[in-house]
Amino acid sequence: MSRSLENNYHPPLSNETPVFRKSVSKKGKIRKTLKPYFYLLPAILLLGIWMYKPLITTFFLAFQKWSMVPGTTPEFVGFENFIRLFNTKDFVISIENTIFYTIGLLPFSIIIPLLLAVATHDMTGKVKNVYRVLFFIPMILAPVTVSAIWRWLFHPSNGLVNIFLLETGLIDTNISFFSDPHFAKWIILLMTGWSLIGFSTIMFSAALTGINKDYYEASSLDGASKFKRFFDITLPLLSPTILFMLTMSILFSSQFTFAYIDILTAGGPFGSSTNIYYEMYKYGFYNLNAGLSSAAAMLFFFVFAIIALVLNYVSRKFAFYDN
Amino acid sequence: MRRKVRLINVIQHLLLIIMCIIAIFPIYWMIISSFKNESEIFTASFIPLKPTIENYVYAFSEMPIVRMMFNSFIIAILMTALQLITSLLAGYALVRWKFKGSFFIYTLLSLSWLIPFQAIMIPNYVLINQMGLNEQLLGVVLPFAVSTFAILSRYQSFKAFPVALIEAARLDGESDFGILLHVILPNIKSTVASLGILLFINGWNEYLWPMLITKQMENAPIQIGLKSFVNSDVNMWGSLMAATTVSCLPILIIYLVLQRQVVDSFVRFGIK
Image (cartoon, rainbow over all chains, first blue to last red; front, side):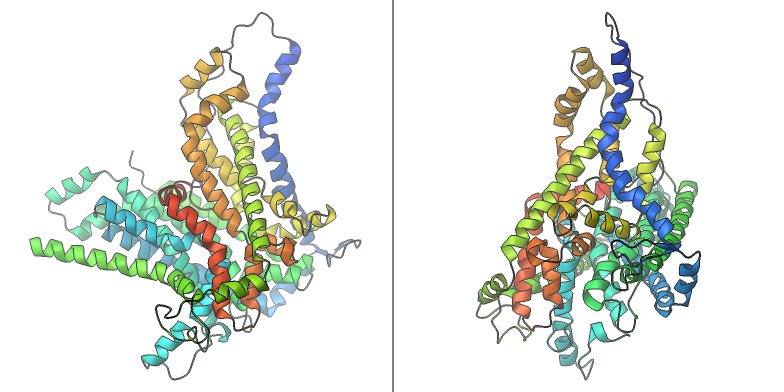
């Protein structure tokens, strides 16, 4: 995702000053008008083929019945897929879980990182960089790597976590974290949080470095306490970053958890850890029901688009920019 | 006052050290587990007392790891190269010229991050099958040949490029493509490089799409092979950790060498 949520397009500053040429042929003129499109062609073509056209196809598939078998044609069924969707038990659970993951991730993507960034802001260069480099590592690891490691750490009989909990007497019997409906989604949330927390902290740290130190000096001369300074200066000036991270966290929480769900629990046990993206995947590639999957996709495409627009509006209206 | 300041410092460091341990420990555990022998793997010892490479030998004999790593490299490098080329060209066009539809195109680009891959995977899967590209690296790469995120980041960096330099080169008779190649690129090398690193990491870690396209181990990138190893019910945790270590080695090496650029590129560009 790009950092620019809003439309930052500005037309080029300078129009081309015409270069003196003896004669500009008609052919040359056409070539000149076509030039920008020529440069954009590869990107637009690929984007059209692999993003916008499939999106339109998915939109139509949402109203059709199709089992993805080559040679068969989809059959129009109206709103049947949408009706079926809401009568599917797993789908309702997946919505609840999606909300659970989205809200559950906020402490890891915003609250803890914000506090950490502020707590360590006035630290000096080299040490700070060492920390930065270290706690960024989870972010760059592949979801499969993270899943493998966590599966081993939380292994029901021989995992380090179970050994530790047993030794310290916190539990009496081993816990099968990934096949226990009470634990599965919490572990997935924890893993996702783990991989995000360092990244968020660094985003906030970077934003803090950009704050003009004069504000703090002026305010501490006024006798403002550290707390007051946090709420009066830091928070407003960080609001663009906070809103950016909020948007990202909300829109991508289901993406972030998808791979972990697929690798570790396959949505189970009893659908207790699934989310909507995982359901779409299941409908499509396990049940071979392209229509149902597309209906869910369309529904949530619009839900997320509305959320994005609202957040975009909020950040434009309320984010405080220090110019 | 002095003491209070020092106490705060201690707390700060403590906080950060705890964070670091939380971040690093799973990776540490992965690496040491991969060197533990059969009798030690199920204990909680924090260093392997009798380190062994047996786990690696087993992992390499069980899975075509070399082949899958090679696939991953090809996929990640191709994705990075194609995304860089398409984004450099597109970003250049958007900044350089005023033309009909430029605003519309920009809007299409900046809205595309709203499209989750799960919403387009079925049509894309069908198309790749029709093209006969399933089980092929090209089929994995093609839908990721363009990254709007890369285009927008190029747009931002071209935007900051001094117009005077471009004008001067143009008056010198440099062609438009020449300006991009000889004037702009050498000056923005470092941001292109850090974007490239980011795209490579993303390509290497890509999961859902390669999983749909490649079913055979020999055609799959390492992530997919590793996934089936994680899900197989063999109790070979030592070898699994060995294979996992191998799979993230390239990323960890890039990170060790270029930590600053990697962190900076994530901060600058966000994540996809």
